[in-house]
Length: 191
Image (spheres, helix red, strand yellow):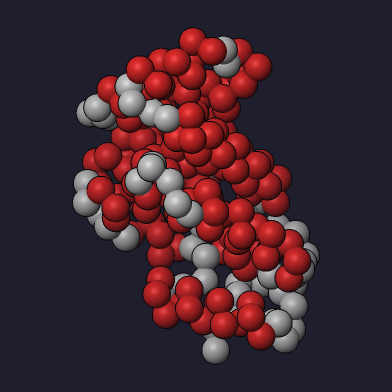
């Protein structure tokens, strides 16, 4: 039976003990599939409602129905997290980019500066939009949305880009504010 890391953040918020049955089952599945319970989930384990809300939103924006590939969503997560200097998300989602792309260099480039990566114009525009949203969302104009449309993105795709960027802007801030640390395993994977 997998147990969450009680030291996932700098805050003294121990996980529920025992965990609700559904939460324990979810953590056991994570442990089986990933070989670990991601510390972001462990951080929320002090409150089942908060954990459920977090995982529902994550699953929707990152795994739900979208024309954006899983890799593209992870690329957005990393580009946004780079702007916000979120150690947790750069480590965890940088690893996801390495795994999904099969390219350890791409993961590193996106962590350091997505502009040096060899991206197609569509991916570059997607990340430019996500970064602009992160740095100055009030400056997004119709021309920014139209530039995405001109590259084949639908309005639903633009919503999805914004949803992923918005989600990671929130989680980056929570991770930084609580000193959330990534699982050590992430650092060595897919190198």
